[in-house]
Length: 296
Image (cartoon, helix red, strand yellow):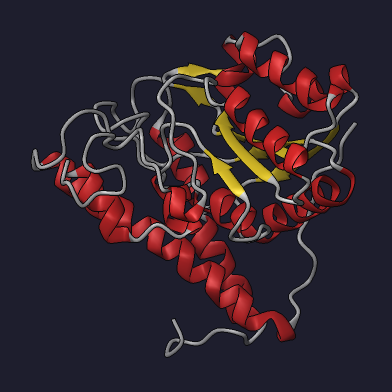
């Protein structure tokens, strides 16, 4: 059984890195708050899935790769695009349907794309992008580069055929890809316990003789450590890894979904908000005298 990856004690020599990932989490949080306000005012059309609460996963994971590595994400991907390097202006312009958006205003919230930064898109079909991520990893291996692919998806995707087909292919062909399941416990309004016979997503990896990890997705440093190990394995050995990051979204499934009261209680939400990844890292840095009010 996999033991959860825990972050190591803070190293004062890495203070600049800690400040950077805290700043990135704050960027994503503030961006999503503004996007939510604009959607509520009718300025953004279509669906809008906010990443508030899950920031530690994208930030911790993408901090472990190089600019030339690839990132694939699902439809809750604003944060991933921002952390990979797409400007907040380009992402917001896309949400507004503007021609200067990162997808020229044609993709909207669920289909951000930025080839300049190797962000290979958000994808609206649940799990539909997993084979594409394997394809990017295969292309890198075929070309003889040492590029790595990160593929983010939700726990609802593990019940579709493409998930199993892709993991089998990645293991069989020894592809440099890291599959990161952002398990926020609910596929729309359906709890994982009601949809899957096996609740521990990371256990699916054993069917394909693949390395696996489980990590606290609310701890950005733990996520970073787990993904760093997986990326090193992919880059040096061309071997895939499945990581289950156990996280939680503070908003509804989309802006059309109530925050609580339908399929989760207010008490559950408040319990999870006490684990806020931004607050958690801020408090750790303050306790270690690596962050003060002026810096913050």
